[in-house]
Image 1 (cartoon, rainbow, N blue to C red):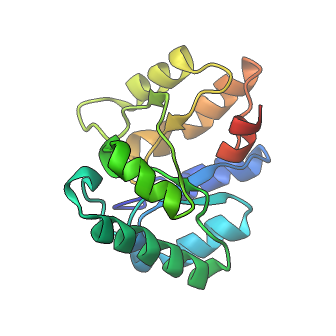
Image 2 (tube, helix red, strand yellow; image 1 turned 45 degrees about the vertical axis):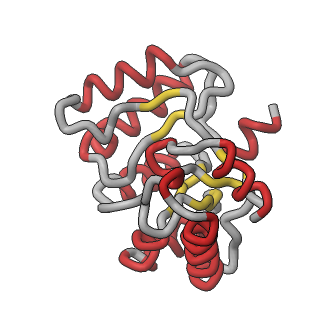
Length: 180
């Protein structure tokens, strides 16, 4: 969750319908713009994780700059929901190196990278392409990244969930995936 909110309600509606929970990586700016959605996501039992405050390239920041990005988002989400974003952090753009990983670890975070990019952020990909990418490439333990501002995801999220369930795969939180 970093810019818009086009797909939030379709995602939440689908997750409710199938009694599923997911992990939402939130930027602080998004949380400030959509505090009621952050509260709804949390109240519906989804896991909250940190995605920075302003969505910068972390390898280009000083340690203090990285710390501010992470701490500001943590404080805001905690204030809005009473829930921490720890222990998961997804660096914007997947931009990380040893220095970033070390700083995150000292701050109590584990850096998360996806195993499958749904491609839903790309305006040149249709919703059917996003659907096929996810259904054809997801396996047990996959970490699939979707974006809550994606019209493509909004259109096909229920088809994705149904298709995965039919294959015996249950969408779940990151904590549940990593515990397996």
